[in-house]
Image (cartoon, rainbow, N blue to C red; front, side):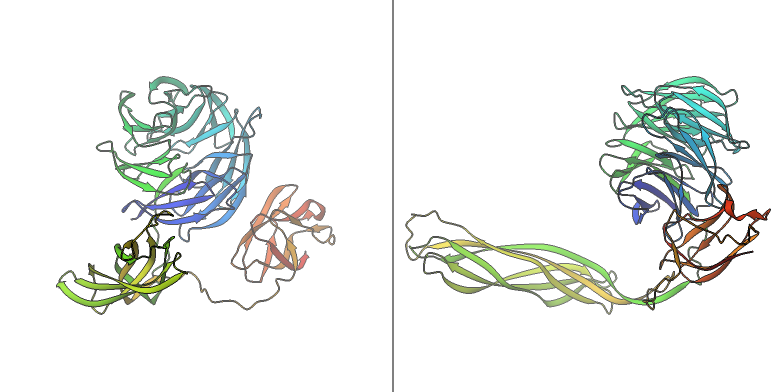
Length: 562
């Protein structure tokens, strides 16, 4: 079962890391580049990502297509995010403005991707964690120095727990007994982690870690806590049994986010200052790999993708040219150029360059290795500025041997990437005899590749053929806007219409009664008839509105009610 790490980066992008190879295999553009993604969580089945965007939006990403499938408006400056164990609800900490006296937590129903509750908490809520039973949510309030406890059955705060200075990340042990809170410090960086007994909702221990602890993750077996220390570029490892630090691991500049693979073998650490992710082997507590990702990596989530994506039936076979091997090299040669005693300077210009394959000889049948003899010819024009701009042409040849892997039936090609020429300049007034020479240097960079036409099976998601151009037509509902309903009849049970979105887009549309959701559906790019039955109706038409919740315009035709 493949395991992927998803990293929230600046410019509103998410890097996708295959943990089996520790390589970035995709980059997802979330929303507009001027937004900022910060925190990220993944549904228990690995199907969807929920990503906070600081400008009041949570984006939903389908991990199958790596595309945004919904956007949800939440509170001001959403930061932390967590999902309940069964995947039904997402809790989002809205930190609010710097001057806000309190923040909020938005509750998203993942069945509808609608906000179903907004809960006031303390000042500047940042971290969110849900206990394994799913009945309580714990939110760190950075400027209140405490943790709010939310009862998920009523979505109300039932308790507040005092912790250290400027709490940030929070994580709960798999048995649900303890929470670990990173206290980053506000006026000056702190170096503590608070341990909360969740059975009594009291702080029972304080663990000294590195400087500026920021985020926390706990191994699946519940034995160890990993804490990122942004102030001293380390990760502290806490033994849960003794609440002591057993190791401080240097990981690189500004460690911020931390996530652990489902099997507990690796911890992934985002490094905000140098755009990298460090990989820690949890058995040895050493850094075993470093991965380059997007700018300013912050939040990170890891999950298994345990569904066919796409299904094996949705695949096609295509022919394409595959590059099996390549080699880039540089060669250089200095040539002597005769000069006159009237010289004021030489100019050297590359007119043409060409790389030719002279010979191919096999050196290893089993590995398809060959030795390739190459020749590069460069045609130059050399001009003597001091002798009536006299010039002449000269061909310079380079010979080069390279070793490549060439599959049976494959072809080789050689291309000159760049060719430059420069001559030594002689200062004005220097007397030179007629039979003297000056030096000109020619530099060439070239690449030789082995290629072959192959057939490959690839996922078939949709055709990329152009569609017939046509006007969208209909009444346009812009994203975030509503559409007025007919005033007759005065009470309604159902709304019927034809609708479509912009090409290649989809947008949810919702019916609200005095601001409360009644029903919704998703509009696609194909013009389709829709009927929305309003549960519990009839409703007075003046209190009902039809709203576009997506990022695409919706085009409505023939709207009627009954």
